[in-house]
Length: 233
Length: 133
Image (cartoon, rainbow over all chains, first blue to last red; front, side, top):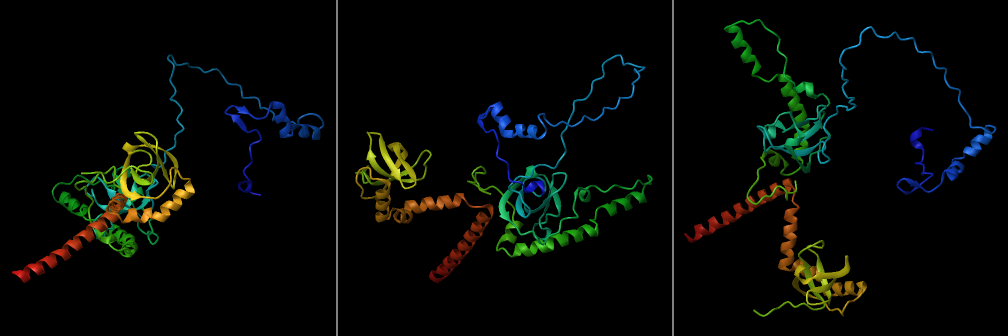
């Protein structure tokens, strides 16, 4: 029987108040059945033999003692994990980007990357926002959700978005320099294809909802009389 | 100039301050110059200062401090809910509530609808102007 199938066990000694149990030590002794365990074992509590402790190898005293005390760094057991995702942000949520060149754009959330950043896409055809990373803090989550089931985002991770490492070239002046600059400006074709494949399924599910396409194409802005702390997003 | 809405037993009032803000309550008794005993189908009967109440036009027929069952029956007989929801005051409150609960997407859709409506009205106006010109 797998341990997960056990019924949750009721506490044998419920608290009357924090720190005070209902039953005394002698009552608890009886409840735990220690008397039965002892009786089974012929009067004494069953003992395991202690493992034989191996003699520690003899340590020689160190040759050198440092003059000043060396401080040890404090122990740090924290683990790095991606930022906690707000409960309102689930795959398919429409987000409003608040900063950067796409501020005000309404965008579809795809998934959270291991760095904690959110992977997001316009879709590109609708509002010009490509597959992009965005920080959770610079985003308002609306309650509008888009059906994202047809989209495969497995292959995107932080490395995909990292800056390309340039091969070190010899410092050539004149012709070399200009040729390099021209190559960098265009986006590689495979990234464009990735964008298209992600957006194809998305755009279909967006067009299924009336007005959603124009909604995503429009920017958000505060108008007169809108109070952000009273708005429901 | 003379008053039209009086504090009396059976007067329906709107709570305008406090925990029960926005509720419709019935005045079932007057305690003293400042306070009334107030009751509603979904709340425990309790006292409330008159300053927290705004009187409405609706009045129901009850005796002083009826029990909950009688109160609910009287409210059904007078059809308080429908009268309130059809009154202009009640309708305004419903619209305010709806507007406050609109989603960002809903607000966008409302904007599109407003523009469309304005377009239709403008077309009709242009037609009428053309006829008279």
